[in-house]
Length: 180
Image: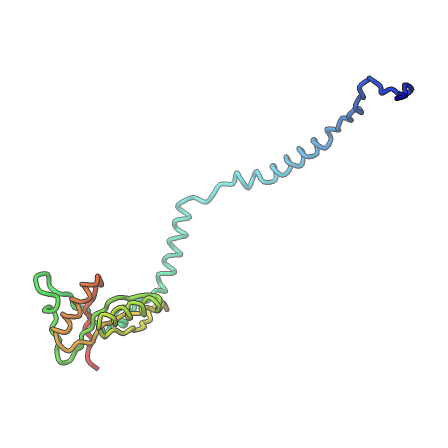
């Protein structure tokens, strides 16, 4: 095979094009801008914060203003409800005997969500207890749902219901209401 000897690749390495040096002017401008921004915000960063005594005084005045607007109506909310607490040595059913002018209920729970109250009511109905859900509004506008068992006319039925609740790990609270 014939070879073409006229064109030989050059054995010399190819030199890369010389790199232009960048001007340091852009670095100078960036440093000047950074310094100007830093000098602008330095007084704000070094400014002293208000003294703690002044802050406490301001918070105290705010609390006093808010406290003057509070209105407690605890006694009006619980006007028709009375909680009967059994004495330490007596049986729970013997502490409060139903009288002629009052009815007794057992509060099995109090919930913010009606679905939770309904769930407990269904559980109590499956235990063969007469359970109802009562919606109660508080003074701050919240709505609570009480799960009540009863009303009871005699102490033996109330003791039976309380025993059944405690056997199923449900705490109960005895409520006395005036008969209407």
